Image (cartoon, rainbow, N blue to C red; front, side):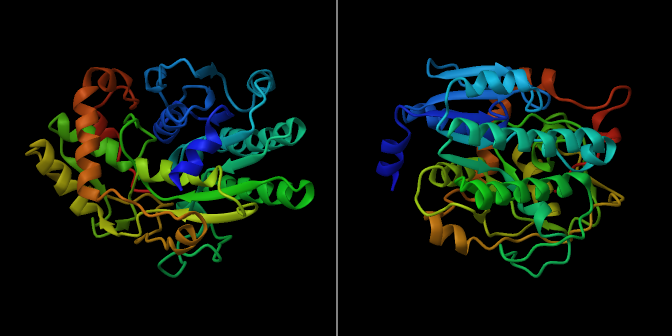
Length: 347
């Protein structure tokens, strides 16, 4: 199957929105390695320019997905495949800024779909969110046929909205849209910060010798998926046949308790400050997350290959190799220490 992927992307122009982010930058590096002409659109609101692969066949355009001037610029390159990863991320951010969330995740997605139709894009891959679509009361493991309208944040609502727009463009225009649903992606490339995920924030605080804040009891679980496995699924989703209109989970299919994650990171970094407990956020209603990946196995031959222990080790190594830049880039609120002000996001 990898031979088919190599053959498919070589010489093709591929647009990646959010290409400077953790998933996006790793995807762009893989696409460039197999000979694609990669075009990135990213406003760097939650990513860093130094994350972008510095190779000849990667074009970086700074701008957001609501700006039609920037959209016209990247579609001028005539991409045949579009990976739409850019988003106003994530839950707490959307609670704080719901109108911005709607503009970026709603209008931005709609505009990209429109330009994709106008310019004859062959396939549009929309990065959906398994942590959003299924709500808080779905039976485990989470399967693609279950959806919920009882969502807890604007981010969850607009990620669902993106899927609905994709369905419309598939049904009305016959556009090849594919909707992989991500679960708790982590790995090299994600800079810690106020609205980022639990793993980069835990590693950052542990390396600074601070206690790791757990919202809740620590018995809560998540389905953490290493970024290289997500990228493998995306590469397959962009080229394999008979995927139009389909959705599928990209996950590890393994539950990990948050308290076990915290203890693992403290041990791996030598952090003796331990952990501390704080109240859960009002919107944080999921005690457990565990995805079924049966459909992804069937449709695209998806088999996550990275153990959680190995993924954490690689991520910590990336932090050590890039510590000076990460420390400068970490986005936390001013005035008080990050460990006091911000609570780790486990969504």
